[in-house]
Length: 284
Length: 266
Image (cartoon, rainbow over all chains, first blue to last red):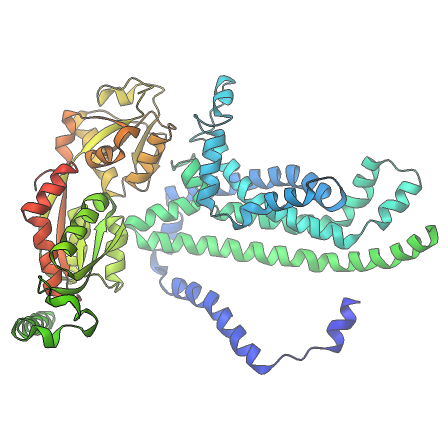
C-alpha cells in the first residue's frame, strides 16, 4: 500500500529543496572543514601512534562487547514491548528510550551512583570481589546504557511491521512459544535486528560523556578513541583531527551498513505480509 | 612586514585611547552611555576568558569591578586554559585572557594576539585531595604509590598533569594512576564521589571543595608551582576596560581575594 502512495505522488515544492540543501550543508560543511584541516603528510604516523592504536583497539573491543550485551538484553525488551501486554508497558517504553534524549554525562552520573564504589550496587559488588569503577567493564556498561535504546527501537519497529500472522499460524499448528520465537519471529525480523545492532555499535563507538564521567580515562583500560581525541586536542590538534577523521570514516561505514539492512529486508517483509494475510484469512 | 603592522596597530590603539580620554562621552559605545556618569568613568562590557581554577575568585573580582564601575559589565567565560587559548586564536571576542600556565599564554604571545606583555598574578601548587574519611590512610606523597591505592591524576597533556609529572620526578616516586583525566575538575569529581582514594589537584581546588575533600599538603609540591599570567587581547575593542580589570586582578584587592582562595603570590 505504501508503495502505491509514493508512486502516485512525488511532487515537492522547489523551495523545500533549498531548505533541505541548507540542512544538508549544516551537517556536511563542518565535516568538510575538518577534512580540510587534516595534516595529510603526517596522517598515517598520527593515526598509527601507539596511543591511537591502543585507543582504537579498546574502542572496537568495548563496542563489540556492548553490542552483544545490547542484543542479549534488547531483544527480549523489544519483544516484550512490541508483543507483550502488561500494565506499565508505555511507561517502560519511555524509560527504556530515555538514554536517547538524555545528555550522556547524566547517564554517567546515574551509572556512578549505581555501580560506583559508594553506589547502590557498588558495595555489594565490591564484597563479591567485583570492582567496576575505572575498569573496562565500566566502559562497556556506559556504552550499553546509551546504545540499548537504538536496538530496542529498531527491533520493536521491525516486529510491529512484520505483524504476528505467521506466529499465530505456527501456534495453531501446535508450535510452542519458544519454537515460534526461534523459528518464525527472529528470522522474520533479522534485518531489523541487524540494523539495530549496527546502530548500537556505532553509538557505543562514539560514547564519550558517560564514559568520561563513570569510567575515567587510562590508556589501554578506559581511554577509548573519543576520549583520546578529547585529550589529544589539548596539545596536538593535528592528532585530534586525524583521529576524528578515523571515527568519521567508521561512522560512515556503519551508517551505510545500517541503511543497507532495512532495504535488504524489504522483500522479506513484502513476502511476509501477502501470504501471511492470505493464510491468516484462511485460518480465520 | 609583521613589525610594521605591529607598529600600526599600536598607533591605532594609542589613537583610540587618546580619543577615548579626550572626549569620553562622544566615543563610548551608545549602549553603555546611560549609567556611565554615576561614579566610574569606565563603561561598556569587558569579556574575560579565565582558567577554570579561577572561577570563584574571578567571579568575586568581577562583582567588585562592576560595583566600582557602575557603567561596566564583566562577562566571564571559564574553561581549560588550552581551550580558551584555542578559542582566542580562532577569533573569539575576548578582551582579557587569564591562563593557568605560561605555556598557553606564550602560544598567544607568539601569534601576536596579545596587547602588550602578560603579567604574572598568581601561583598555584598541587595538593593531595582525599575523601573526608581518607579510606586509604594517605599521609604523604609516597603513600600514593602504595599498592591498592586508587590514585587519579591529570593527563600529562594538561597543566595539572605536567605539574604532577614534575612532582613525581622531584619526589622520586612513580605513581600508577587508575585514571588520567583531562581536567583538574574531573580529578576532583572522582575524589568527591568517593570513587578514588586520592587525587592530585591544586590547593585552590581543595579549598574550593570545602568539606567534601580533605587536603594533604606535601613538601615536594613546591617543585612544580604553576604561574598564572594575565593579558589584554590584541583584538579587544575595549582596551581601557581590559587594562582596568587587569589592574584590579594584579592590585591589592585582587591579590587579597586570590590569596583567600589559596593562590600564592607570583
